[in-house]
Amino acid sequence: MIVFDNVYFQYEPEGIEALCGVSLTVEDGEHVAVVGPNGCGKTTLIRHINALFTPSKGSVTINGYDTQDAGRRNEIRQMIGMVFQNPDHQIVGMTVEEDCAFGPENLRLPTGEIRERVAEALDRVGIAGLAGRNIETLSGGEKRLAAIAGILAMRPRYIALDEPTAFLDPVSARLVLEMIDKLHSDGVGIIHITHNMAEAAGTERIIVMNKGSVYFEGTPQVIFRNVDKLKTIGISLPQITELLIRLRESGLPVRTDIGDMDGAVSEIKGLINK
Amino acid sequence: MYHTGFYLNGTSPIHRLDPRVKLAAVIVLSMVILCVKPPIVILVAAVCLCIVFAGSIPLRIIGQAVKPLIIFVGLIFFTHAFFSEGEAIALVNLPYLNISLSRNGMEEGGLVALRFLCLIVAAVILTTTTTPSRMIAAIKYVLGPFKRLHVPVDDIAVMMMLAMRLLPLLLMEKERVETAQKTRGCDLQGKRLAVRLKAFIRLTSTILLGVFRRADELALAMEARCYNRGERTAFVELSMRKTDYGIAAVLIVAGGVLLGLNSFI
Ligand SMILES: Nc1ncnc2c1ncn2[C@@H]1O[C@H](COP(=O)(O)OP(=O)(O)O)[C@@H](O)[C@H]1O
Ligand SMILES: [Mg+2]
Image (cartoon, rainbow over the protein chains, first blue to last red):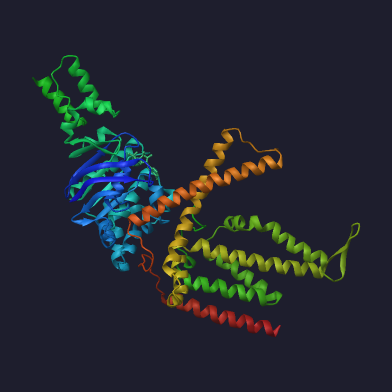
């Protein structure tokens, strides 16, 4: 379990607070989305999860280990994988498999086990065929999958992803999202930062951030029931939700707390059948 | 375009050879080539050429590697050709200078140029047939004994890997900044030197700033994957096969034979 207790954080000693009083918990195996306008502190928040940053005030504990405890940091970082927003900033190896091996090498695993884990991780994200490829020859989507494989090779219990579909074309984005869903169904906890409310609609819980603190949180249904609240902080709704709201405004009795295509389809179908 | 190093994918016997043997071969070759007499230099050059074919390295690649050095090689050749003692073939009359082209000088210049080219070709063979990671593993192996003297061998290996990874990014960054500056009207063709110098400094500082920021982020990403300084294990494990031992033996014998032959002729 990941627990944030009243966390404050500043980048510079006298600077503004990038996080001010964040409290939240994420359970084992949960799929959580973190949304919010640009600069609201999403990236700063998830960097606290694996002790890259530690709070100026308050505490972050991972399965009972405080991130301030330097002796536990390696354990924490192995337990919670971090996928950076830009894979180019994350990938250190020259080929896909070498980058994938970077984490296990740091964990000082024997060569045989490293190879086993690399093969497994590449297979899990579906890029086993790219193992020997030079990173610079990959497409954006493939790079992103390679970055995720590099994290999976450490066999984490949670994965935090910072805008995993940023810079991707719709097809690659789809592929990455499906991959995340698969990991979640394998029991990996997912903390998923996104700009895209439609993406967030597919998770179990949405945490909305604004100006360095948690603005409100709840299941997608609860969040989409509070569209006005979202609009005041400048978060745009999924187009499908906008459509349902318009339909409702024009007199059709549809629910508007739906953010995903499947939900909308069954809602409209139900209406037609009535 | 910006592939790391010059490595060419392949499965030739040269590709499969243990990188430590290759590294040793290059060292032996450099020593031999620099201290033997002309006929043996030609022999070694021929062997180099055979290895190029055995490694199925396109001659175009060799050409690319030699191209930036061609002026240097030419300079070596002409300096020898014109400034050596010997029977003159042609006289060049220049004010203040009285230089002559001699057969002896041309031979000498050709030899030095050939030696130099052999070294380049050997380096190209090594880098085109060895993946950077196997190369780093080989260097790590060679440096292994220095661990006792607290030389941070594992850290050096990581640094080399990062350097190779950052190099193409650096080039891309340069191109990006250059294009950005050009679109803002900073075309430097034909401008005064002072203007160009200023623009150059601005370009370099912009790139450096970008690279520092990126290095910061990369350091964070490495930390996120449990990187700590010191001992790590390795994905790439070198192991000598029978062939590798065989080639190493051949190498030692060939080096000895060539040096022996050299003192005969
Ligand atoms: N390296 C940094 N130094 C100083 N301030 C920063 C740094 N990174 C982010 N900030 C500031 O912290 C706040 C939160 O940023 P960030 O967590 O990146 O937001 P988000 O990921 O939600 O867009 C912003 O006001 C941003 O300007
Ligand atoms: Mg961010």
